[in-house]
Image (cartoon, rainbow, N blue to C red; front, side, top):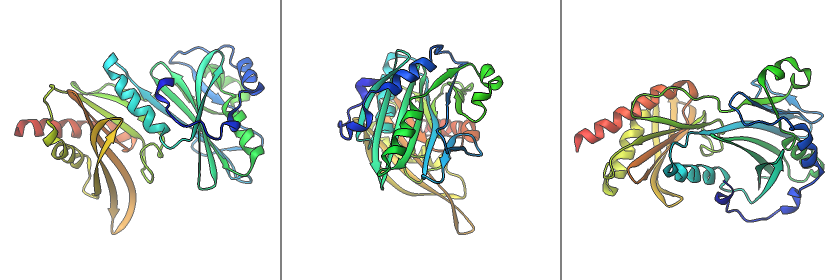
Amino acid sequence: MKRFITLAAAVATLFSASAKIEKSNERTADHKKFDNYSYAIIPPAGYELTDNGTAFRNPEKKSSISISHLNMILDASSENELLKVTFQNFVSGYQTNESVYINDAEHYLVSKTENGRIFTTLVVPEDNGSVMITASSPVDDLAEIEKTKEALLSVVYVDPADMASNPIFENSLYSIANQGFRAQPEGSTLVAFCESGDFAKEQATGRLVYFKVLMNEDAVKPKEQKMFATEVVKALVSDHETITSQNAVEVNGLPGYEFFITETVNGEVKSKSYAMVVFTSGKYYCFTSKANQEIDMYLQKFQAAAKSFQAKK
């Protein structure tokens, strides 16, 4: 994964390898990369766990630490391109990166400064994807930045059963690795989902979902791509939703189209979401920020629209 990070090494002083990493090594001596293991983050002093259990908040310091997933199934070497697109999309806009070693496992630390805040993300590699832990702090509070960084580097790998019985984890931020996979309709694969709204473009809501459908080499010719992308995304849009804009995009050299969608009920904007269709040899991918409980329904709609398009040819 390291070869996919091509970011400038600015603000490097914030990420010096330090004793904090060694301290993390001691706490993760039992680290094993199994699907039934969880990642736990112990909160710094002054942080409170949010109601949904996915983030810490420090109201006084206006800081936060959140956890999200980037899970994916790479079923062949050809899928490395998808990994590359996915990871580069995630780190796009981050100004610095470095590798850190926790229990002899390589992790990635990326950072960006935006609107007076510094966002630091620890990318925890898994066999089938990554867990991402992000800290946000005011850029002028160096002590708070160091405190949140230390929390990021205190990743603990633990069996969920041990976590439930150990009081040290009672108020920790944790996540079960590789959760969220499910059986898929024949002929299609749910490749990944991510809980990060930022990943799915600013103002997008819900989880980011990848739909992948394998097709013949000439399945969607270049001159048909715009029409195809529009048709399959329209199939995902409900009666209350409108495609407000669409643009041609290039993602890591792959052509595609992005769509911004607004849900309006009784004249009031309820939510905004985002979708993108990317084309590569013999395949196409749809990225959408629909809610997790709707994944199966949207996947079926996507599949039906694709078949309908092919039938018209």
